[in-house]
Amino acid sequence: NIEDWLTTLLNSMRFTLKDHARSCSAGVLDVQNDLAKLRPLVDSNIAQFALLAVQVMWTYETQTALEQCKSKKNAMKENSVRQSQVLTEMSSWCLQDLGTKVNRKKIETLVTVHVHQRDIANELALLVKSKKVHDANDFDWLKQARFYWRPSATDDVSNDGATVVSITDVDFNYQYEYLGAKER
Image 1 (cartoon, helix red, strand yellow):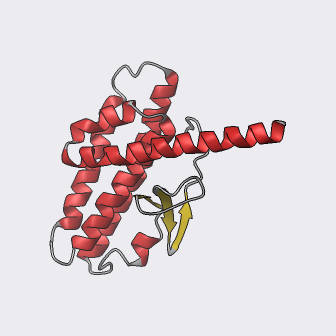
Image 2 (image 1 turned 30 degrees about the vertical axis):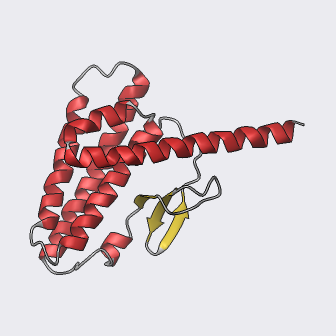
């Protein structure tokens, strides 16, 4: 019947989108060593997962800097510089021929979201410098929407990893719904 067919379609879509999330999260590791690999990562993913990759990368880099700030004095300053470099790189793409309107919207969305992420990184660096934030457990970090790929986590799609969105002390499993290319 139609309900069974639609349920099968929905489950197949979510499984496919989870596979894209896993793939773009794995691509983040390459970008951390070589910023030139960001463009191929973005170009090889639809808007939803290009954005997810940038958000996972920002979360990982900022959290790592916060975890290191007690033992590495300039960790947060270096992270602020890194986030500015990422923003400069993505902004430079806007001056190029991006082909389709959808691709331009994807790149502009990434830039818009990363402006906010850069600002948060800068604010956290100032808070660490003034000793108001001490590590990744401070509320000023926890209140941010943080995106993780957790390979050992499970969700209702499958048991082989999960994309998790964390805000304060609450974790939400990403639902793998197709979102399209939305303007921000």
